Length: 147
Image (cartoon, rainbow, N blue to C red; front, top):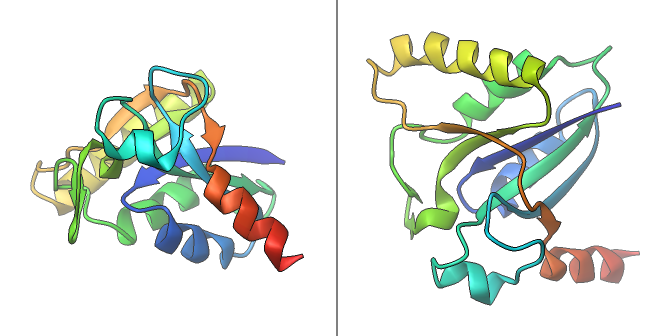
């Protein structure tokens, strides 16, 4: 099993979309890239934590590749808008690929290069090492209530 952590706006919609991909075993919403190991929705919304809303994707690389996950990532959001997706505005809604190793970083760089041709060089998606990932507690509560 492999892991991808991606920020592409408000995490609820992308989480559902990624969960439907063949080869995706589990999805989870959370926050990543911020100053602290733990945060809350209220803190993130202040814009002071530097966290992005993210989807953590556990997937089987024998069924779906990291490249294919990134291709889907670029399909389901607008990678040319800085700190916003649709009506959602703020740094937590930025487009960002969080990598766990150098291989993921290299694949992400190639994906941006490939997609930048499609978007005429306007992609603002950042590539960053995973930092301070934490589960969104409101998601965890919602998940527990479904069980």
